[in-house]
Length: 191
Ligand code: ADP
Image (cartoon, rainbow, N blue to C red; front, side):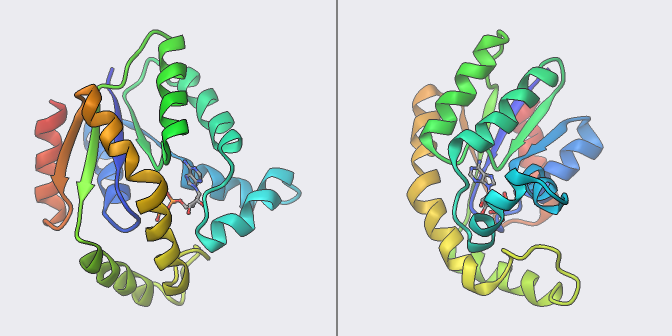
């Protein structure tokens, strides 16, 4: 049973690829963004209240909150093939993930990093925002927070690429390519 991390900036296509891997390869997708949005949409959730503003401004929510959410899931799905989408997002989260996997005697198999030029990324995500303007449920998906989300990615998340490269489990895919081409690349990497 494989454990894979998909790593990349907002709009790089990791959500799309996660869904394909769920449909075609039987993975379970653990998206911290989705899990947190679930909390914020609940009525009377103290946790939801706490993270709402941070998410809407594109900042990271505190480590202990996401870690608590994800560690429970690691145990629950230890015997399944899992994709981590949106976690880890900084070095501390990366080491906590390693530890919690080790506690149940498993290791990460691969970390797939979506390489993409930041100008193309901005164009792509601005297009997505325009297309979904009227029915968009995500308050953080707008041009104002986009710049901040990319900055947060560069500052907090990019250092993890190095961390996994040193461990010898990093693979890169070209995020500019078509959806099916990227899927092919990922399929080869994880097979
Ligand atoms: P995107 O991939 O477009 O950045 P996500 O759905 O992955 O969107 O995440 C949305 C928001 O949820 C982030 O901007 C952040 O506020 C919060 N979030 C998600 N995952 C984490 C995490 N691992 N650590 C801290 N905050 C997180």
